[in-house]
Length: 390
Image 1 (cartoon, rainbow, N blue to C red):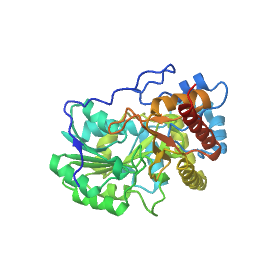
Image 2 (cartoon, helix red, strand yellow):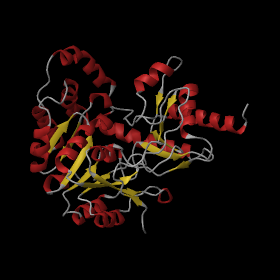
Image 3 (tube, helix red, strand yellow):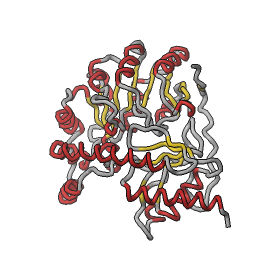
Image 4 (spheres, helix red, strand yellow):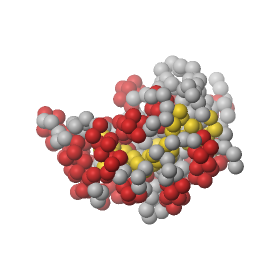
């Protein structure tokens, strides 16, 4: 089946931003800071955050208490250099430290992968995480965009994607596994076959930032494959998995030559003391972390079932800790977002600024049942207002 594609050069025009609302939650921003949202709308009630894809059950309260006790020391003194922290993380994960590079968030790694390992062109399915299109466009690379189709549930056809890469002559291929914002997951066997078929490329990147939330099969990650293949990088985001976006830490796995090429380019002290402390604590809290993933999976299944009961919503299949939803015609994603946060203290991600999407789509992070109650109350309230305008 032929897939609609675009190969923009120069940079493509992004979807026109929705008109600014009185709330000032600009559609052309990645997403308004949660701190700003809480400051402006959190006086009457705590904000239920369905926007930032984090882990609702980790770290545990005990971990936060320990970090609080250690905070004066963590803020007063320098951290270890990144090599020492990376060595600790690799030991915890059972990886050779030479195959790991750790950075100040996965976005820093995307930047350096682009600068060091992408020479002329990069293929990427869209919609996806925006830095995989924006970063190489900013440095003058050709970005070959493979359009995922709504009628297919935004599922990635790996064989068709490989054909697309061949037809376009792309030298680097990227896949987010699972994909953001739709949560689509490709079985590991198919991904390994893709790596085999693209072994002549300069680089294949598998962004596994949300993979820990996937329970589709016993073994999902391609990190072990990346460590022994000549052109494969696997990217991980610890902030997303562990519910600590503010700490800013992620890592990549690749063969030693690739991993150390990136590691040598990174600043020696690019990891802060909080990141070092969390890495040091993780080994003691593995059971709690696994439990958090089980609870997130339970919440995901419950939330998807409840969303599907809302008339007019299209709820796409997901394998991770967020859900892509298409709103009924006439609802307007930006208006729904603003209504929910102002009237119900519920903050969602409207997707009008994502390539390959429109403002009819919103991404909803999986939350506990009590927060979902507030979300559904807000959606029903909006539907009632549209049906019976004043």
